[in-house]
Length: 247
Image (cartoon, rainbow, N blue to C red; front, side, top):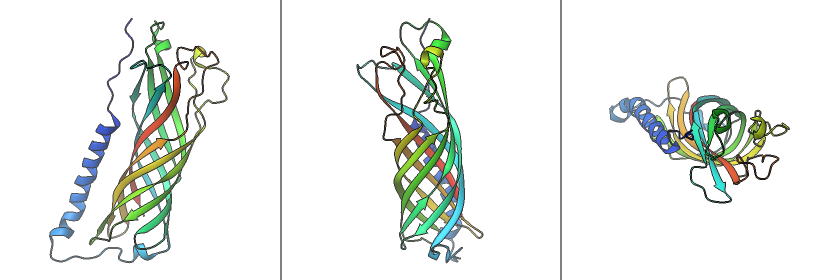
């Protein structure tokens, strides 16, 4: 029986499509302001407030980066899907160009793992569906340019903590009973970019951000020679978030 080989969209492809979406959105929202003689500033004093709040919603896609004890290409094949995320924003103004942001939220993530060990003959041995409900707690530094009429580009980065409500870390069953386990708490670093658009009633911000786990997330099976986890040295999440923020 053939082992699974999944054709999946890479995070780079999704990033390119997301970037194209932001550029199209930027063109639509800015064209009138950039090319018209009359330029009306919306929400002119919004960024002068010391503390502002908002909310965001968006899409995500997550993959895993596996490091093996012994190199065996394609030992585990990850099929990614598009998930949903939502949260709130607290923004502290440090100066004209720097803001400190806390953006707690929830991300719903699904990844399918295909194991290619030669001993597997049944589909239920080869596939593990990994569903995660992640509480995301990022603390980020936003570095902006000078406001250009009604829009302002920025880069953003920082650290975050992910609490996985669906980790099954304490589940006594492992892959021998069909249960894939991962650690509940994970530290990450994040980096990305976006554009603030100052509309008549609110500020709208599309952004793209990469999320990269720092600590190993895998909970090993009880059997040290497990065909599922025995050859894995570390497993790290890699995610891309496309967020739309309203303030």
